[in-house]
Each structure stands twice: as C-alpha cells, then as structure tokens.
Image 1: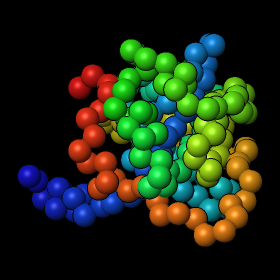
Image 2: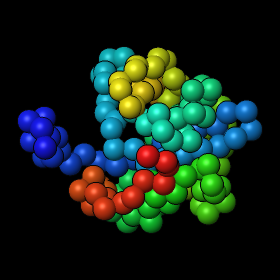
Image 3: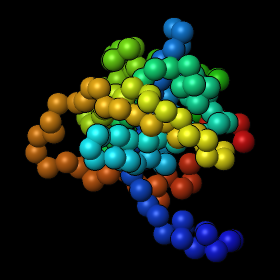
Image 4: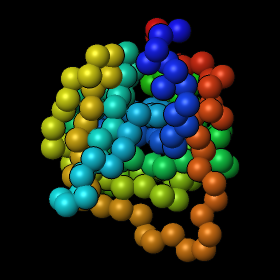
Amino acid sequence: MTEFDTFTDRLDGPMYVVTAASGGERAGCLVGFASQSSIDPPRFTVWLSVANHTYRLAREADHLTVHLLHRDDRALAELFGGETGDRIDKFARVGWHPGEEGSPVLEQPSVWFTGRIEGRVEGGDHVGFLLVPVAACPPYEGQPPPLLRYRELRDLEPGHPA
C-alpha cells in the first residue's frame, strides 16, 4: 500500500457504463473514473482502460454515450464490467437503440448523455476522453434512486484481460 492509496481508498464515486460505435461495431464497459470537467462550456471526461475492447473501439469513434448507474442496475454493471466484448456481444443481452452518430443508448439506465469526443488525454493505463454533450435523456421525474457506487462493485472481476 502506498501513501496515495490512503487517499484513493476513501473514494467512492458513481459508476457508469460507457458505450461506443465505429465501423459497424459496438462496445461498452463499466467505468469508475469519470467526472464533469467544465461548467461553461459543459464538458465531461471519461477514462477508459487501454486493456479493454471499448477503448480500442472508442479510439475510432466520434461519440460516446455515458450511462449513470443506480443501485438497481447492478446486473448491467456486472455484464459490462465482468465480461469482455472480445468474447461476447453484450448488446445481445440488453435493450438498446442507436443514438447520436450510432452511439448505443442502453434502455435500462434512465440517466445518460451522448458526447462528441473533443480530445483525448493520455493518463497511464487509462485514456481520458473529453466529451462535449450533444444529446441527453429526458428530465428525470420523481425522486432518483441511489447511485451505484464503486465500493458496491469492488469484488467484480474485470472481464478484459489483465
């Protein structure tokens, strides 16, 4: 354990599924490193592991869709985090439709946005994709359910190769 682990072990951010499409292919993965990165103009950055299938497809994509997960989306998190698109078609197991520029929009998470990729930032074993929002879900009605947090998925084995 390093001194930095003392800091990062206390983090418990929300979890997301990020989807991409390019060249007739679709991909999606579970993401824990993501954040709004500008208010005006609005920007959001998602960090994709260079080891996973979604990253390889996202390099060729123009848009990504970011889905915010709630606690009742655990099965979706397990599918997109515990399986790899190198071996299975995750989209055959869920409802979805093509969104902006074909970026897959999942039907289950009710909160999502699609962003045009404005830039990429090398960050070690992850690459940050800076997104400009171009489409979003309708406004949420009622009290939103609790978010699915990192700590609730700590035991999930990643589907992509180590």
